[in-house]
Image (cartoon, rainbow, N blue to C red; front, top):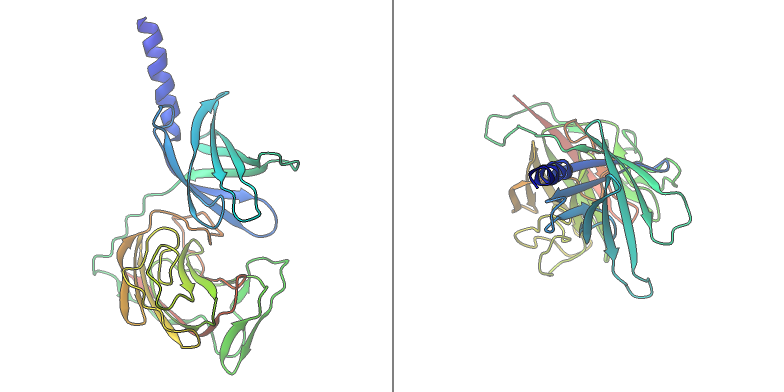
Length: 310
């Protein structure tokens, strides 16, 4: 009996090695992709978790988590939506040298499983404590052309141009990503959208501050000014479509503050992990800015980044 209990305890301890937050690199196609998962209580009846993003660009709840055949298996069920049937996504992984080596396959999928690798999300110690000083501002948009930016999808049609000093897209097209990378910073962005626009600004290539045409609507985690799918803005500060709007974004470590048209909508919010815009999973490293352009129209007339240093 004692040996059986000891073996069971060791099995639970081994299963718990899957617990925690993981940054995931997806090995698929020319367009870089990154996911994020949080696992809790693996190996127990109360196992639970969250995943970014199985569908709809959202933070998805994991429906089941088990350990079988010496590895982890978790499933996410995408509910039926309009004429799209429900489907189940199955993720499997094993711990190899402290990393997750995994696959994803949708029930009924005939193609080979999608491969991915996961590493533990790093501890980021930088704090927004008032000790950071402004460096030299960097103009990411020069007002003349798209130099300094490239297509996120190298195979996509790059339908971005500059007209009368304004950077604009012509969807459908690719998102764009800055050549320069940053760590802690202040960013000032002036943008304009039309009716039904949906865009966003990606910070470090990982965390999206949503842009949405939602004037007058109640705020939620998909609203303009939201840390997309994670934290809703405190108020809806959107202007009507066709008017110029501003973001002032202050990011230090995992703490982000956003002023939207002069209103503080995110106030020292903790960034727990990646959002669906993520194209790189190296959370402990500097990263680029992304402007989302694959959904609908967006215009940029100013994009100034001021590095914050000690």
